[in-house]
Length: 476
Image (cartoon, rainbow, N blue to C red):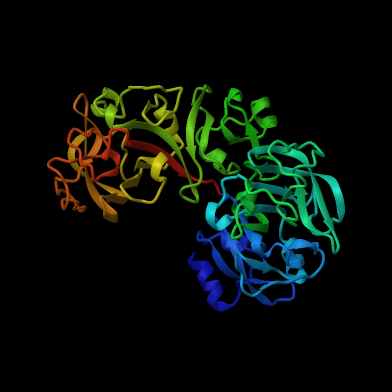
């Protein structure tokens, strides 16, 4: 990050797309881009929604503005700039010159619906690559073109053909889900001549882009971050496949050719993080080569992936695995069925070898990661698996308990065989973190929960949950 800022100040940093910002910046927003002629312009960059790839917004418009020529009947290969120096969601399209400049530095394109509202959850979403389908130069009616992934109103698929329309003075780029042409068939639930991702002569309020007048559609150009591209890992192109539960995977996983031939044998969630964009249960291999299902959090903290090692509800706090069995002793609970209410992994040692960090979260399925009632550290400073002790001060990277928080400070921990599972006590006042204000007597946090505080998320109610995770940075 420091070198990036130095380059900015010295005038040497002249990015041609959002990819360059993705190497060191992790906040989405408007950044300065340079066209092929050396002229700068502002562009909106999505740097976090799909790990390993950065996206540059080329156009966005609301349903209310659907009949403006730039969004209705002007193909991408013709100039129809709208507010090109003021990126916005309601009425924006880059000039053809700037699109062409970005296209040179892009490998992929995508379309999204109401991105400011929903972000990226792969619902009402479309993605392809320029090699298979050059959307800028395409002109045609109902032509079947191959895409990497598509979802329209819950109908979805990977690596299949979709019909597209684009014609001068007639159609801006889009598809028609009522047509039934090509391999993709989302006709169930479609309205007559339903337009998707563009044109919108006929629209369906059940499709996110056209739910209401303020619903929006976006088109983007993207490319892989260089640090992901330098090594093979899971490259983006044609490797985002949907697995059915019966395949041993849930959600989006590695491509069938690798899995089927046995060459892709990930030891933790990190290897999925190189090319997978949806959290869920994936197949992991232990050090003995045996596979098991594990829940992977791939998106909540950009640049790092997390593997769930245990989760339990407040109602189950007195079960030995969550109350008085330290991590270094086996106490598996539903080891082959990851869940939030009663789960503890037997294969912790195997995952630990491939992990650099650990964290604890509260009611992750409800709150996700907002760093409230949250704890994170690294194994180098504190090996939580092998630790046994009472009230010992250990250094953590970040901690928050009921709004009391800090970075790079010590926290008291307890863990003893047949007495305590790993936890801290915010009432104790020991070490550098002082979370005593608002604490209940002998308040247990992130484990044991013999004494609970309903103001702490993990113990708000009987269905509140606690999670522990092992994690590591994505490989460069």
